[in-house]
Image (tube, rainbow, N blue to C red; front, side, top):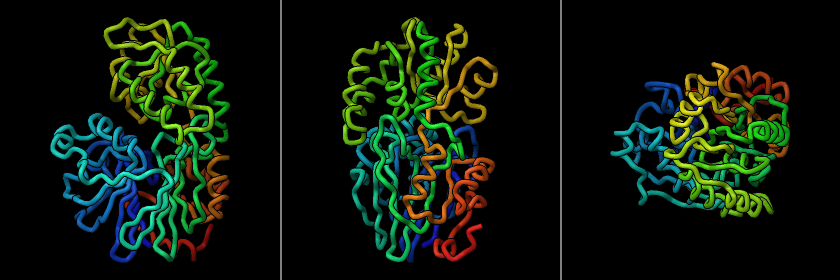
Length: 391
């Protein structure tokens, strides 16, 4: 089995991985890199797409699906596997992050979408692809690809200790591609959630909380200590996510449904509310928060950023200027989570995606088989990893 590292290795963004065995080849995710320009914005997919048999999309965040129209523009004409939730959310992601002309010419081809449920086992040629709930977003999954000789597990984005979402155990494998977004960050999600709750309580008379439409929004709602408002355009999506009870931990759906029902709706025409306000997206690069961040800054409204801030993004610039606070709400594994995933998978050889090189070096001290030298653009033979030196 061969892996082509097409994006997200030694970097954050444009996550994409090709898995090949014999004449069969599939793509796992096809994301973009926020803050990059030119070729670096897209996966490092050189040459023809004719050899790609199928595309499997883990979830609808921009760094995992944002280059789908770009792939279609290059001639890809095969099936695209995704959950129903990913299919429903992907058009809005592409509208925000794809090339506008490319998205108009190459929208998501509904007739080629193959819908599956988390937990399903899929087939493409001689490849068997197991799936499981990611704990990251409703409809989000990990993939484990088996060709009968070896197995590669690709976590995509996962959260093993979410307060909201359920994650299924990644199976034993020969190579594990970990979500290394946070490196060796030792602070668990419950601690960060308390920090966010305390910050919001200090600013309960009005603040802005930029957040992705899916995933982190539900984590924030669960952590909020009192009344809040949501941008009106988010409500229907949030209601749908809360209604997907199979993706959530037991009892969480009822809690979130009650909290959302009591939340106020806010629109762009309204004055800034005297309440904590959730608005998408999390970086201020698109959606309502792209308009709200400068408005809140001008009005002196406190802003709390809670996720990844690509260099040069509006949220990053505001934070660096000292006009926005930042407390990470973990929507990726912290140290204990990744060590646990690796141990349950049989302590295999491992790669880390969505992570800069310095953070990978930190994580290697806890996961000795982590291959920190792997970078976007490289090709890896899975058996060679198993037979090589683990140092």
